[in-house]
Length: 400
Image (cartoon, rainbow, N blue to C red; front, side, top):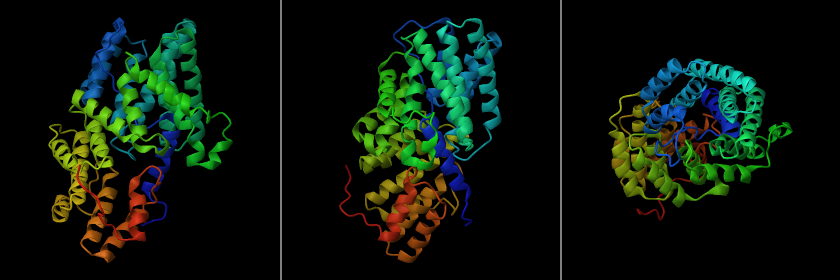
């Protein structure tokens, strides 16, 4: 394989997104059951956010289209249409097919919100929409490794959202993008030491960022579920913030509320693996494999569920069953999502070790490492490195 593979480019750009604007989440889901009274605009927005939360992105897009026709000068439709597109992009780590649409929606939102701010400079709502649009635009730049543009928009978005909070301290939703920005920017030295020279990145505000995200998750705002989703991701994957039990509980709660959201369901599978609940993992994976949706996102998540079922079977000492579960994938599959094939490769390598076929296992471990992935963002290369060091064994792994 070439030394500068597409996977390396994807991994590096994902790092930039994570640092700049808080990927993992990236998905902004909202519950329609707010305890406070919703404004007329929010009443229009809520069904679209609910569709996002349910994983029905086509239905969400229809809401934003109707909203824009009814309120052509309002930026909300463009801001939330961007969120729907980012939901979809989460399934395609290296895909660019939504870039033009994201850029268009962001530019329209920025244009409309900037006009709002200019006309009503003391209206917090205008700053709220403008700040979100700027953050979204910066995120796209980050995805495409345009570092300075990413942080330029990110900083503008942060300052704009903080102005919204100055004008309306009760607008808790504005704290979610600020909190994500603060938290992930604080990780800059851990990812790329050479980025520390970016003097305008707020690298010392990680705790404040977490506090903001927690505050939104406890609020009755539109974005409280999104905040909980981000916290669960942080607490399931970031070494300094690990709380697998809390993350599992949150993913379980979100899955029960939105059973057809394939992203949430897959995150629940990962949480079960982290907690070594392999029997439950196998059962939940079968449910996700049978997801009724036929869209690209749903079928990609179903493919990943099959891989995670195989991993659960492997850890339950069902070696032949795990191998058979993966037998439907070719060497370079699944291609949807575009990060799925590496997990088939590394899982097969571990299974080969368990079957005593060390030479074949080593070849697969080396194949994973040749993808030049970033270990801090993907467990697959770390597993491959460990596999090269010594043959994989189940040890004392037991089902819970």
